[in-house]
Image (cartoon, rainbow, N blue to C red; front, side, top):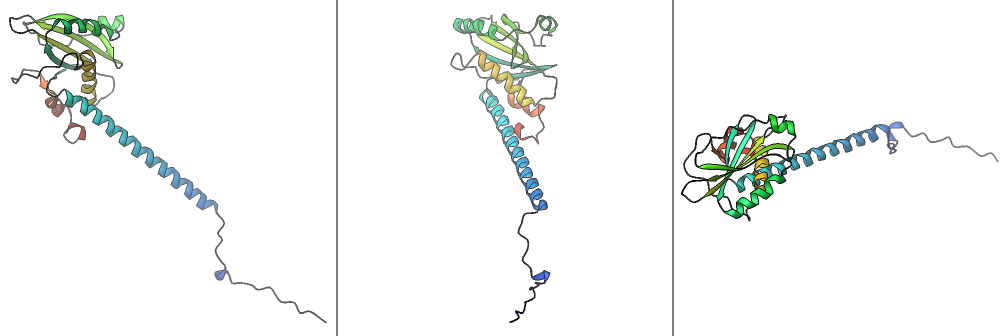
Length: 219
């Protein structure tokens, strides 16, 4: 008996199911998508970290907004705070100011003193050129010599760095050094006087003039 062979069934191409095996094109597209998501994640993290850093600077400045005065100088800024003059405060400053690492001998010789207006009622008692957070600083402590209640003036000159810097960051750096020298629990800083002094600005005045209004950090 002869067996009749059935010809193979040929399915038209348009009726065949799609090939679900992964192709090189889809794999490369997925790799690009993952790389893009990773890059966007890095950008978001960097932006978040930058905003956190700015907020930290603002917090430092707000803490001293009513007690610190700023005098812009050529090559840096001068930040001044006043305290009630007590023997214990002077003894504290004599102990803590030298803790700022000294600059090199050449830097000490070539360092230009900041142009601070001299007050006849103040007598200098401490002067030190040192380093704070890899920045050159000059600390000057003066004591009032008049018949009124004695006051201590702590002036800190912070030099500029070689690259452009946000004024908010520079001011916060100087204020952190001030807080290191005289913490609040050692002696609270006195309120700024109501009368204006030529060349002396409040923190808000300095930031308004030094930073464009369209920067969120200056608001």
